[in-house]
Length: 115
Length: 108
Image 1 (tube, rainbow over the protein chains, first blue to last red):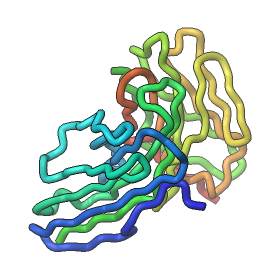
Image 2 (spheres, rainbow over the protein chains, first blue to last red):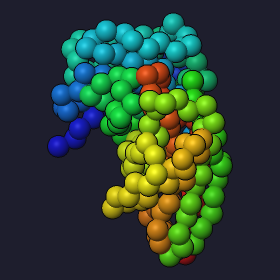
Image 3 (cartoon, each protein chain N blue to C red):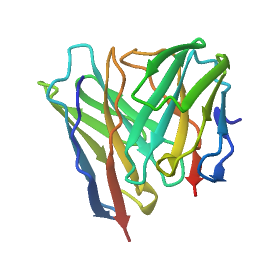
């Protein structure tokens, strides 16, 4: 059973398009995250939701909009894609947020290439 | 925010012990130190966590000195399959920051 799943795994698109990435976790966790990893492996948090409520919103352009229909799903919609959006996007989940002993479970990543 | 500093890259050979040190000078009293491992084309996965002294599991050991301003991840007898990026995090009541991690390459 896949704990955290993301679709699609690969996404190639043109500049200016709108695209969505979906994430689902079956771990019963309350908190979900979106991360962006650049080509230098720098892994940076973008958003976090706790029980469908936005908790963390780092300095991310408002072209990126997370949506959480329920606590098992956190989707990422990106408007007007730019070349700099090319990266690997990881979804993650954890039992609690801001718990010193919390560990995060990551999905396999979505490799986005904007042409 | 407890910032961490770790080497960008390391090289080793099969069978050797690898130690990756992470500095976290402004760690807070309630913070834990957590390490993640990321294989190519996969998401990071938790490998070990500790608060002080030494923690050991089936994958690695974690050494934390008394002042807790640094920690060392120790991988015994590495193999080619240990080639990965290793992230050191200080986790407390704020957003955990992954950063760039240490890219470990194990050579035959």
